[in-house]
Image (cartoon, rainbow, N blue to C red; front, side, top):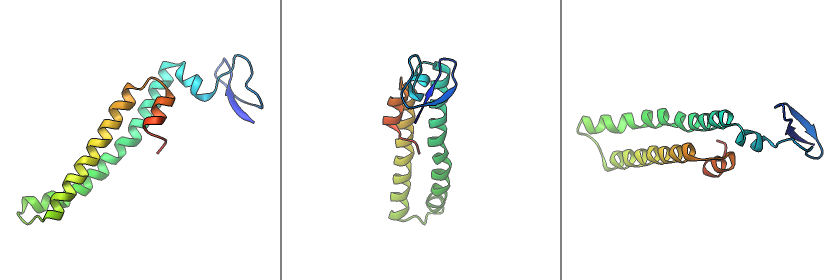
Length: 110
């Protein structure tokens, strides 16, 4: 049995989609406020990674500031900054997305 959303917005289990009912994605896509929250949730999931990246940047940056950095430190900083940039690009695409399907293609559930 699948879950379909009634015209009143209540989820119900049915073997076949009743006339006038919506799939979850159809419901979200037809309600801009819900789609906006869906985008916000996905962006928040991705943004959580920024704090982790920043924490991983502290040691190599400290090494640079103390003039004892190595090539490994420079490479690590570059890799982490690229990772952060990639996450920003994904967030920009999510914000521009028009449907749940677009968002899920850009960034499957984390």
